[in-house]
Image (tube, rainbow, N blue to C red; front, side):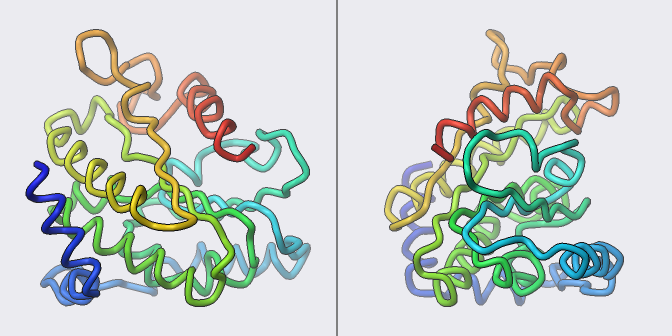
Length: 226
C-alpha cells in the first residue's frame, strides 16, 4: 500500500498521471450527458448568482441528493450545491468552468471517486483526476481551499471496499503534502464495530445516504468549515 501511494504521488507530481488518466480507453468524458444538470446550474445562477467567497459543494449524487444542503451549516459563508448524479472525479475535473470557477469560492468541498471505482477505474486514476481538479482550481483561484470527502463505504459496494480504502489513502497522502488541501474522513465514521458499512446510514438502495447518514456527514464536515 505505502509503495503504491509513493508511486502514485510521484507520477502526479510530474503531471503524467492526470494526462494518462484522461487517455485511458473507456474513460472519455461525455459532456452531453450532463447538459441537463449544467443547464439547471446556469438557470439558477441567472436567477440568483451566488456571491463570491462562499462554499461550493461539488460531486456526484451524494451531493445532489443532500436535501437543504445550503442551509445545513451555520456561519457567514453562503453554500452553493453543484452535485450531478452519476458523475465521476474525472467529470468534476473536466467541468471546473461550470462547477467551481465562476463562483470564486473560499472553499470547495468535493465528493467523487465512488463511481470511478465502480466503473473499473483504479485508485491511482481517481487520484490523478483529483490532482487535475486541484491543479485546475489552483491555477485560477490560488487562494481557494479544497476539501476532499473520503469515498464512503456503502453496503451495495462492499466488495469494492479494498479499492476504496486504497484510493482514500492515496488522496489523503496527497492532501497532506499539498497546500490549501484537506482530506475529510467520513469513511471510518461510517463503519460498524465489525468493520462493515453501517446499514442504518443508507436508503433502501444501500448506496445513497438517508437523513441519519447526512447528519453524520454534517457533523464531520462542520469542524473543517470552521
